[in-house]
Amino acid sequence: MAILIEGRIFGLLCLIVIMAAVAYYIKAAEGGRVPRIRRVAGIDAIDEAIGRAVEMGRPIICSHGIADLRGATSGPQTLAGLSVLSYVTKRAIASSAKVLVPVRQPEVWPIAADIMETEYKLAGKADEYDSDDIRFLSTAQFGFSSNYMGLMMRERPGANIMIGAYWAESLQLAETGSRVGAFQIAGTAQTSQIPFFLVCADYCLIGEEIYSAGAYLTQDAPLVASLAGQDVGRIIAVILSVLGTLLYTAGMTVLLDLFGM
Image 1 (spheres, rainbow, N blue to C red):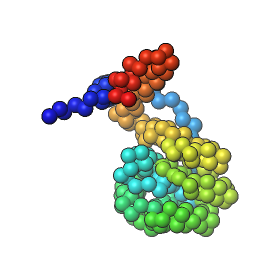
Image 2: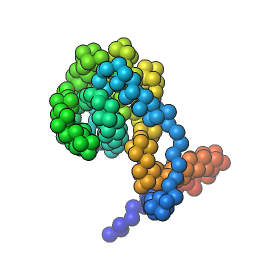
Image 3: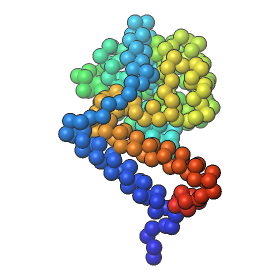
Image 4: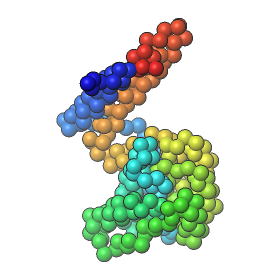
């Protein structure tokens, strides 16, 4: 019985190279050689958004999107949003600001609650934690969206931070946030929704920028190093794309044969 599937061996080799690169950079980071992350204006603006909400005496709404944790492409976006929630909560506690978290997925609610409660405990303000700040709105996509819009209209947040997976509700939420005068930072890897965030939000994180948010905000060496290792995979993908295009144009199907296409 063959273990390796014909046509996928080259892909396996590429994966091994990427994993080796990640391991190398993490090891280098442990030795003090931490790669530098380029500046991301949208992530830098999170502190500005929190400060603005504090000055206005208004709450902060921090959303991690509408997806669960099981989706192959949407799950990591939810995790990215939750990593931002951790940072926003920490900064808000230091400024005595209120953070409201709209939730769609029941399985994500306890995780968001635990993140916020942990930050309050670490700050020595466990008694100030209020589980009612994590608002379960609806499991229905547009039920969640309409409740989220109602929440913004009632609370008039000074900042609305949306990082995660969003679909057709993205423009509804961003437009409502703009209408109530909230400072908005939005980001998603759903390419069809990015244009709506670009139009309505003050700052927009595009695609894979949301995945770097946790490493960027915490400057945690292993996280930063893993990003550098993943960049090796992106470089390989670009090289193979360009090389494959040139070879195919010349009538050669070497790369296609290696990938079993």
